[in-house]
Image (tube, rainbow over the protein chains, first blue to last red):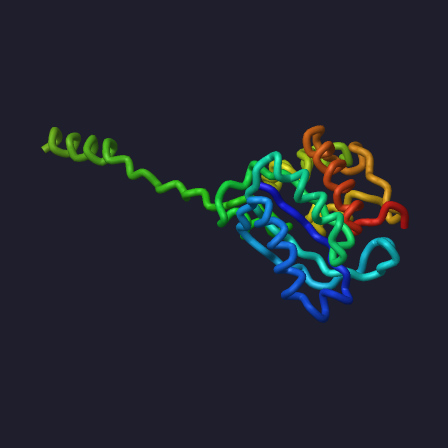
Length: 136
Length: 73
């Protein structure tokens, strides 16, 4: 499982977003990658100027691909005009698609511990009844 | 007195949250682990354990590359 974050030129993102997404997905699929999830982050102000751009649009794609295909995928993206910058990171810990949905920044620890059920001590009660029986 | 208070929260923040690896896309926690200049906080200052401090270091550097965080501000 790989995770690619793409920084896309705003002039292209605002006018032909669908084309850009298709262009990126085509490159991935051409190299035998299986796209699992595509997510748009929206326009953001960049922390510093990248190739003269002050703002950019982010696109996050999760995909499965062969190890050897990554080299050609990277080269194709570097040649692309739409993409200012990209980062492909391997992520082996995510196995299910549901986990990608839960990739949200704030990951609170699950607090679904089962509350302990108060155990009624039956023994004591039976003892009492026995005692009562003996007295009688 | 103050020492006791410190010990109460001795566990690293990511250990407390149950996070395994810190994500470079985490725009809530990562800026808090760097100074206003953009420098990384020390392990002592951030209170992170060795594992998570290493993870933070890697993810901040990734975030910087993607212009999510500044190299120098």
